[in-house]
Image 1 (tube, rainbow, N blue to C red):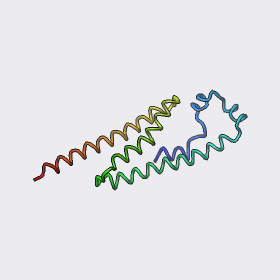
Image 2 (image 1 turned 120 degrees about the horizontal axis):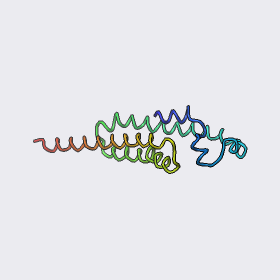
Image 3 (image 1 turned 90 degrees about the horizontal axis):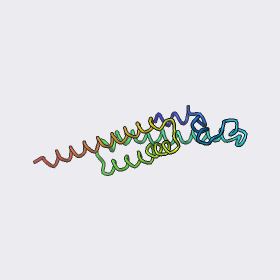
Image 4 (image 1 turned 90 degrees about the vertical axis):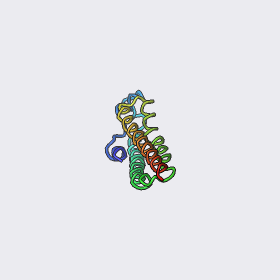
Length: 132
């Protein structure tokens, strides 16, 4: 949810790494596409809202369906992680982002949490199956 708030409220339209990737200065960009930065500001509001929502829904699922081990919840959360933070990490490595390692840490935490949950579920199913 914090990443979503960052994108919606704090992140500038373009970072220094964006200008490096495009091989343009901010002056060149403003002269070539004067409305781009204003448009990008709105894009990041929307993107931040979506990222915040993914985090909010993930927290809700973790507090509800995850706790009672609903069938398929691990797959849904895994796919949500892959299509959200996973894709963000892949793209940030592809563009040589300054933030790629920080994002990889967040993705690794997501994977670790899923792994621990799977391990716990396996332990619970063994305990239940061994009961008389």
